[in-house]
Length: 318
Image 1: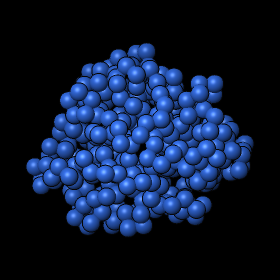
Image 2: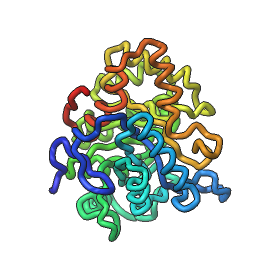
Image 3: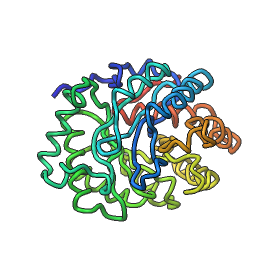
């Protein structure tokens, strides 16, 4: 297999050395997607209708905070458009990593039902090695591989197993969607059971699960713990997120936390009255600093951790 070279990231516009990423990373975002099941167009980020706002926000964050990379976890069945991602990346001046895989069961594409694990694995590997469709754009991460509930459904189990095998075959890392934070330990069991090292796994949406014991167990087993819905106050308060993150850091696992905002509908964009991609930098991190976090810890959480997750390699301090 043609694995990415060590210390190299695969972006929608080409390979990028990790050493070129000098500023923060947003490791779980959406720039283009369509999750509209109600027909109201709310759960959408359309490249033509909302692309200018997305580009403007990313460009502003690059200028103000040095935003250096976005990991875009829109996968199969979520309205993925890698050509649009490449346009957004070029116009915003921010590198973007695209994803492949399947979300949780309500969004599975028809091929999931008809194929077995081996066939789904081969499909993912082919897309990673040859590119998405005829675009030539190659995914640089598997995600967000989904399940809901405390135990994945049979269909979700099949998808998780296939994604785990594809990660092993291609050298990529894997990020999950654990609906409302539930089922993360079961996801980790499945993926490590396929032979994927825990250090190449990020368990998603753990800031929606107010259970520090689960967070510690995930981290102790070597997985990354995603606090990736920062600013989504209707799901969880940022005050609770800060408490949970502080508990994980104080338990000695600051090197296993990832932070992002998971902007997943146009109503979350700053121009439409939402918190925007910048909420992490403008609101949450200042509050974390006020609670005692120093700049080395901020760099660890926002740059070194996501780069280590993506590559499996240690990253030097700034």
